[in-house]
Length: 296
Image (cartoon, rainbow, N blue to C red):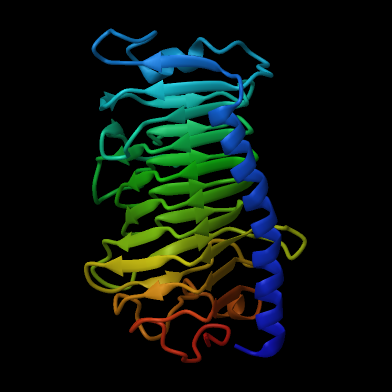
């Protein structure tokens, strides 16, 4: 990576790091401050048996911290956090014990198992999955609110797992699994210490970032992450002409193909996208020139 690009990547990471600190404080506040506590328990020993019922109980234009504690179980629900219900935290105790699951496909805005439209949202220790499998777009999680944070969560699907749509988002210690464009959208997001697992059997892309203009302050940064997979994949392809993705200090297994990136069949995008790797390591982190100068 040329020094100028190295500096640019560091500035981008630093900006998102400041957002990460703010998000961490918001999460801590939601967990420890005086908040409205709602218990969800399928056995009937809580306030509600369904997560959506607990969300529906939060008043419109909410301005108080609401902490929804979900007891272990498999919750077969299609969940929406409306735009007029900010300041909600949904928390399990362990991600493999609280599973929110649905089976839907088709439209990326209608198929998600969980849709977050509200701002100042936090999710902790949950599994969110779409079990549709190969053959169609099947989103597990859509995040379209601002200042959303996810801690220790698992997002599972095959195609288009995580629609990281719009807003500023932070993901820490999350496990994200899929095969085709399984992290996509046009948010400004930081992924810290996340595990990305590709189910691709060939050259499918992990990311498809949709920045469409050089004036948009959006992009994905992966910091201290880990990439594994079942066969081979590329790091990303440009859904938008000015797609921007940075991997820094990330372990890449040999699942990543030598070319690293794909131009989605449009050579013109090679001069407008910003795809960089900074001090990544592992057998898939070869310092080779590819799309727009793939070079660590």
